[in-house]
Amino acid sequence: MFYDARSNDHGLPHDPMKALIVPRPVGWISSLDEGGRVNLAPYSFFNAVGERPYIVVIGSTGWKHTAGNLAATGEFVCNLATYDLRDAVNRSSAPVPAGVDEMALAGLTPAASRLVKPPRVGESPVALECKVLEVKRLVDLEGTETASTLLLGQVVGVHIDEGLIVDGLVDITRARPISRLGYMDYAVIDEVFQMRRPQS
Ligand SMILES: Cc1cc2nc3c(=O)[nH]c(=O)nc-3n(C[C@H](O)[C@H](O)[C@H](O)COP(=O)(O)O)c2cc1C
Image (cartoon, rainbow, N blue to C red; front, side, top):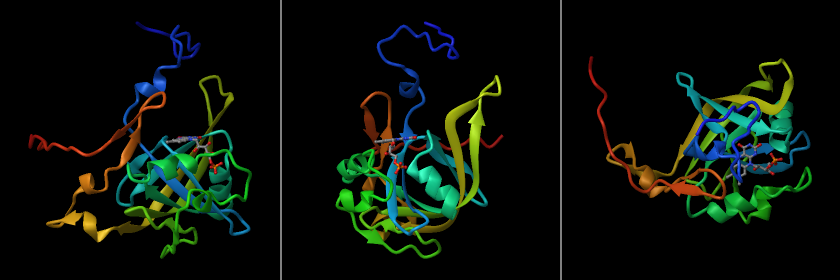
């Protein structure tokens, strides 16, 4: 099948697009509002887009609390969403009013960050402390403003649970991160394989 993504006339009962760009890592973003109140929410339009320095991207569909906090305070933490924490990840996505602390709502423990003010999720084995580089409202091909906002941040601090490190390498299967697929589907990383890049 083929369909024109601009008219989105796929003819299927559900939009297939999010089932096609997979797996998407889940950035579990903690931030503070201007009053210092904690916010936590999962974002699967999330990835690393640069290194030296490491730069992460978050895509917000609509102007949500995370986007507002990042624009206002310039700091956030990306916590690793793991299989063990999946229910808390899901609970933290509840559409609650501004100022409601989803970290508390999900029964999680705030742990102090080192270089930024927002706390990290104490139960998560990996946390990236970040400072905002850019908040960009996206426009489409016609120049019309879309509902999407791109948030770029530079990683300034990295927390790794020592239990993940085996012979100097991170064994990510010990953390079992979850990733987002389409519909209600998720995947869990608990099996990996290796390939070496060609030399020429
Ligand atoms: C696994 C998962 C991934 C999500 N990814 C996104 C995303 O990439 N962009 C987005 O705008 N909302 C996403 N959401 C929905 C937000 O988490 C939800 O709207 C949340 O209430 C936003 O919180 P905030 O207003 O505190 O930022 C996702 C939800 C879940 C459960």
